[in-house]
Length: 290
Length: 333
Image 1: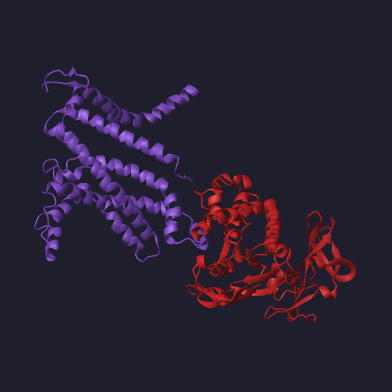
Image 2 (image 1 turned 180 degrees about the horizontal axis):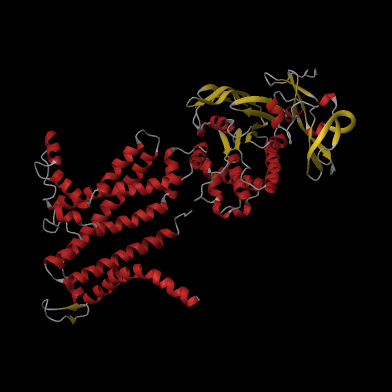
């Protein structure tokens, strides 16, 4: 009986398990293996080289630039989009007219595919004829070359990412806000707490589970979302806006070096796992879950 | 002292609270009593400043507070759901208002210690509300309301989430606490037993209006309206049509005695200490006229049994059948 139950359980698990193993676990293991091998050409047999690929990586200046870019990209986009998301959620959760329309408006960037968004922003960012430069010219300022200037390119990408992500995160905050009892706010008012204290002592701590969830997703997205690079900068100029995942793509499919690409992928996997783990360990004790 | 004068609240085209007038003396325990939806909670919220009245004024200690923010009114409040901050410890919950009002640290500690002693929460200070029982949460809410040493404490059905036994205990406890601290309290409830047993004064509301204000014994002995007569007392007062008047007699005042009004038993409901007997006292041909009476001990009446009932004239109340208000001669004293 028990054995039959077990069999049934395994059969029910099988479809999901097949997909997970075939497309996640097995490729991950293969990537680890591949990062420790090398071959002269596509037809030559690969041979085990130990950590040689990683030595290569340490000496690769582009790798370090990409890591640095990705770091600043995360630092620049994650806290800003979270703060904006909370602000917008508080606003559209309040007593205002046309709440539904506003919520939709904020959510629109999320509905659009990244490629579409990038194309729209390409128009905004175009030198001289783009929206931003035209607006700046109207007030007498010569607009910069948003995507062509190495000092501006990464920042321009960050602005677009914040625009895209804040609305998405707002939805989570909005859902969380609606579970908070209005009596809590009545109590805070009677106790003489102003809006500032109420936010920092009540709303923000009670939103912490959402913030952790959003934070993990935002950080992962900072590494995972690179679709816009294909449209906007292709990582340029001179790798100024190149990010790790895009570099992996370039290495594998433009430079056709799948062994080095595997090595870069391992670095990314480990980094992402560590980020998620650190957040869980650090925040779990500090967050109040209901 | 709190004075509420001509206060109304309109939602859409419905007058939820209509021309509310009453006062709370210092140290007085006033119950706002009424069925659900009668506007008592809305009234309390207007006194707290959580709702804005459409008309009227609210005055606390001679100061007009009608449109003041809730935090500036110097009052404490206990909510029906307790409204404890779930992520803060018991201690932080109690101190929340003092911190918001920037009370000195040593003063905070002093008040915390005394309040915690009063409600008996000593060993739970570091716990979160989620780790406490319903009764303990109730105490935290109470402590948070009285720690501010406010002039007036508002309570919105504070016992409705507790089981019957705990409710009885807390009832006594809250009343004792109120008298010990000399607090003024406005206590919203739909439970007549709570109002009768705790309050110095009852404000009985129905459909947004005040039906009667008085001492608990006034409401019981001299109900001003048919509504008041039937809301207070269990089972409610019997209302018997008599010509252009309505007669009211409480079940506990009806005796079964020979030589009274003839009646026919319909059913008996045994409650332990007494039995509630339902009887039809209509004379032949009349429409049915039912009364309930309280018979001490276990009554052994069978259905259809003929009985004779009687009540003393001083226990009889008279109401006008058109206005449904009392037309008793008021005792002159």
